[in-house]
Length: 434
Ligand code: S3P
Image 1 (cartoon, helix red, strand yellow):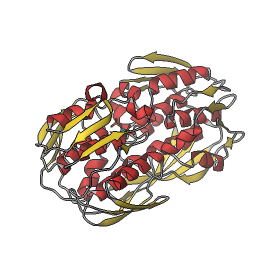
Image 2 (cartoon, protein in one colour):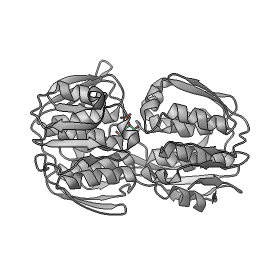
Image 3 (spheres, protein in one colour):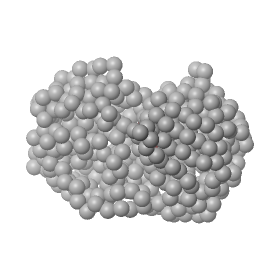
Image 4 (tube, helix red, strand yellow):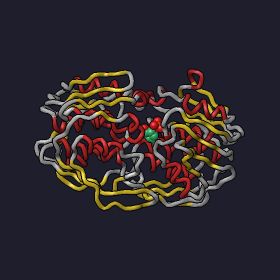
């Protein structure tokens, strides 16, 4: 089934977006490993986070879930049991990588797999460092591709310098340290989203983050326990990006997203849109559950192309597809470089955006580690291939809101990976779903 979205009139409204995907995964994982029971509210009931729940249930964790309300009955760091079958992580890299870290030090065998997209994504980035800690872990292509087979082993602690700014790798190592009862010290590119560090502290663990002459370090002593913790999951800024950009590009629009997560390591897109001249306002800034949240309003704006600083990439890595769609309506060139990581997400997102934007009549130059979009009138009126990637689908649907003719995507069902209810929400704002 194909789907398109058009805007016969301006978009208006105040909305809440589903809970943050990264925090939702961690809230169930950490509560499963904790002592005691806890409630999670605002949980994202998207396919990715449901994969995390399903895998944990296979290891004996009792989890009650109804919509965005979840109750987890914690089993403690040593309470998981050997799964009777392959753990199917679906499309979710976060599920697979965090579980790999968590399972490396458990006293049983487990096999992690997923859909075709996940089975084609690189895993050496976790397998290498986990092996260095003593993990017995293997996979196809000499350990680079899932299925991954993990034979639980005794881990020894260690120091590891992260060569890529990946929160999934950082979190896998911290979980290996925690469940393997081994001290861990991480340096290098650790300024990726820090939900694991923040949340582990809220669960009673000692996690030290220090800045040593510009060198950041995260360390975790051995011998810790987690205490179950209530989590109120804030709105996902990576989902909020779509209605906010829709308001920026459709004339006369104004949309407010309430309760959006404003973690400084997640909001590079807001900075970039600000640089482009976007009319954005952030109000009602407050602290909720150890994170800053706020209401963010976007109003239709005349935008100008910018050079996005490559060092901003970790704080907006999932937002480049929607930024590329935004750039199609900006005056001049938007240069996005230093984003090779986009090629190993749910799809090769540089390639998919270049192909999709070109099919819609937008001028794009592809580079090995980035791309450049030149803005102008966007003809649209075509069907775009999304390769099962939720963010590629939503980015093109938003592009179609302001193109001459709407854009059709081939697999709208995949949107439920991270944003169930996306099309209904856009319809509520004034979009037309066809
Ligand atoms: C995530 C980290 C990021 C991001 C993904 C979620 C997380 O991946 O792209 O959607 O929850 O830790 P990387 O760690 O590969 O950068």
